[in-house]
Image (cartoon, rainbow, N blue to C red; front, side):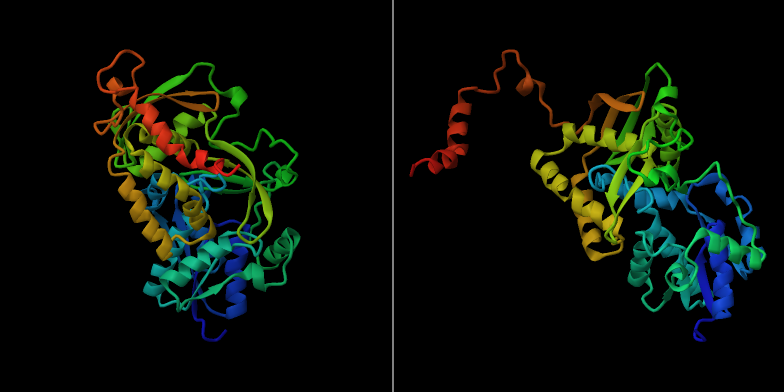
Length: 398
């Protein structure tokens, strides 16, 4: 322990990380520098710097990295159409490598010997933080108090907080563990621990309940360039502003909620509710545009790799060579995913109703049901005979 003189802590200002700050100081007798990433979580950041310093931090970094998050992490993942287990848009997963990257940079600037996080030994985040740190700054030690200390419950944490003069935020009306950033908000705990229970109405933040959504559809257009959403209703927006604006529009229509039981990397199943309104609209619109301007075999090959890419993000391998290599392939597939999609938003649904692209592969003269002069339907007979040869061959010996 004596070798550790300074630690950089991923700090949210909540109960867990406030206690962790004090626990590290007490246990390692060292300086603690906190890092709080502004990823779009909003009012949760109010007063966080002052609280960190009051709890014993020697320095408190609070940085707005929303644009970097959207541009370099969220958008590349959306280009890959990544969905974990076919449903989850990976809003928590994709934030962790950026936080870890910035912690490593601060640790180098501050001359720290270790980084620390508040992830528990049951969850995925411990893996994501630590794999990213190993990839970027392998000499840094990682301190994970939830795996080291003897506190086992919230009651233990509250007692430690009271003993050390740490304010304890308690809210019986908000029993869920939440993680929010500009891409999504997640809910776990409370009544959600029983997979049979319907989420309480208060378990909404970005999305209104479907019952409260407007009774009239709203139509929008989304412009893409090389697989990236660049303009909403004709107005250019930066990546972060695109997601934030779409969150407001789609959220009021109740779009983007997923309630699922998933497989954690550490081996257990967990139930969570995710709200990803803006990301859902971008994902649906881009997939629709791909149908117009993406080659069939390229699309099918990319689609076959979606589960693998999503696992890399979910498991914490963002900085692994296999993810970086796959990203190059993904981005190649997106070079001509450029155009406009028109969508209707209504009662939890995002429905593409029109699409156009300068790189469209759709030919009306080929697809028409009316008479044409570019396709000889008689040619199909030979095609079918050739592709069916192997099927006929199976019966040859019977």
